Length: 311
Image 1 (cartoon, rainbow, N blue to C red):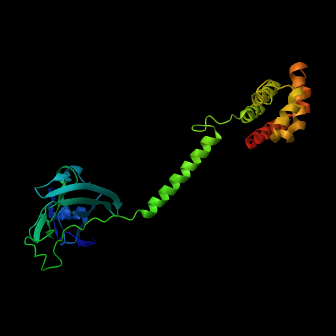
Image 2 (image 1 turned 180 degrees about the vertical axis):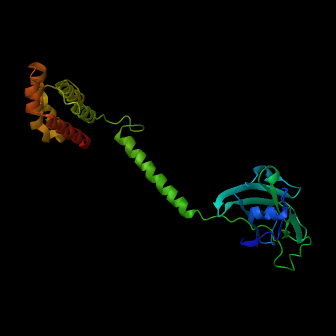
Image 3 (image 1 turned 120 degrees about the vertical axis):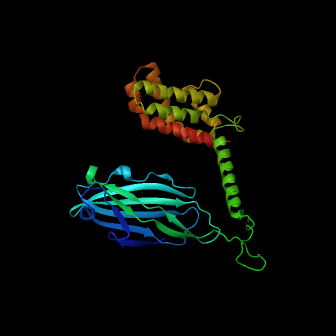
C-alpha cells in the first residue's frame, strides 16, 4: 500500500484566523501546510486509512492539544483509531506532524465514494489564536464480492466450496516414535535390573556394591573416624556375602568358595591387618599409612566388580 504525497501551501486548506489582525497576519504566522494522503481508491471493509498533516508555525503559536480529534466512532461506518502528534523545532518556529489512522466499516454493494471529514487545528492562545482547517478527503471503496455472483458452472473465477482436508503422512514419525519407545523400554529394564528394582527386586543382593558406595562417601571426608566407617562397610559386606561373621582366619575358605574373588587375596590380608590396628590397637594413623584411602577404595571397587561377575 504505497503512499501518495499531496503537498500544498495554503491552497487546499482553509485558514480560519481567530485573531483580530486579519488574514495577512494569520498567514504570516503559518509557514507551511502539507497534507499527506494515501491512494484514493482500492479500499475495502476493515482497512485502516492513514492520513498525515504537517504544519509549520511560529514558535509563539503552539498547537492547542484540545483541538485534536478524539479517537472513537465518527459515524456508523468510520472510526478514528488513533491520533499521534510529533513536535520538533524548525527554521523560524515549530513543526507539527499530526498522524491520524481511520478504519472504515462501510460495506459497499458496488464501487462507492466515501469522505473523511475535514480536520481543524488551533494554534496560539487567546485573541491571537488561529485555525488551520484541511479539506475533506474522498476515497473510493470496493465490495469484497459482487451483488450477483456468477454461475460456478460457467465461470471458473466464482467462489468455490472449501477444499477437503487431507491427512498428513505420519508413517515416518510413527516409526521414529516406536523406535524411541522401544529404546526407552530397554533402558528402563536395564536400570531396573542394575538397581534391583521391580521385577528384579528378588535377585541376589550385592553387598559389595553397597559397600563401595559407603567407602566412596567416607573417603570424601578423609578423617580417621570416616576411615573406621569405611572399614565397617566392608566388614558388613563380607559378613553378608559369607552368611556369617567373617574373620581373618576365614578368608582362605571364603575365597575358595568364590573363585571370582581370587585376585584380591593380597589386598584382603592388608585390609584385615588395617582393621586389627584400628579396632584393637587404636592405631588409626598406622592403619591409614599401611592401607591409604586409594587402596581401600580400590579394594572395594574390585570386590564390587567381582561380585557382578558371579553367576
